[in-house]
Image (tube, rainbow, N blue to C red; front, side, top):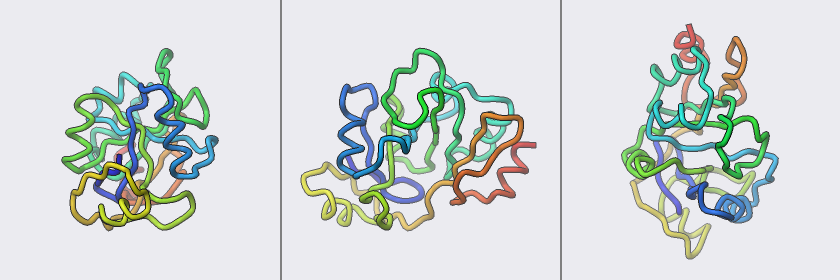
Length: 175
């Protein structure tokens, strides 16, 4: 499905459904070595999926919901086909009521709603035009910047992608 977020429109699937993430990779044309992040409803849900360090917890408590994706160790037994490294998981809690409400029922594997390598899409009509036949939830315009992606697996955070949350805010929240 296509859905709005606090940054840009996204494509999302239930990662517990066999083949769903494979379909998402194919639909977008995304290489499977580029992992899909997982949208969560909050820190509690994130803790069930990933091993959040004290620093990662500090970032989540300070900067979620918002445009921050945390890459952390994946908990044993979390069986989701997300691509990338099987021992890691990217987690994000978006500050938009639509994905937050959907994530109350469970996490969603998600990616920006665009063909791989093309510009982000800012409206439901653009998503529907680019992906005909896809269910798209219209949440108005989303003309933000993609999320900041931070590797939080070590003693110090490492910036993987600059985005909606400034690196200065990340470092301040990390402590």
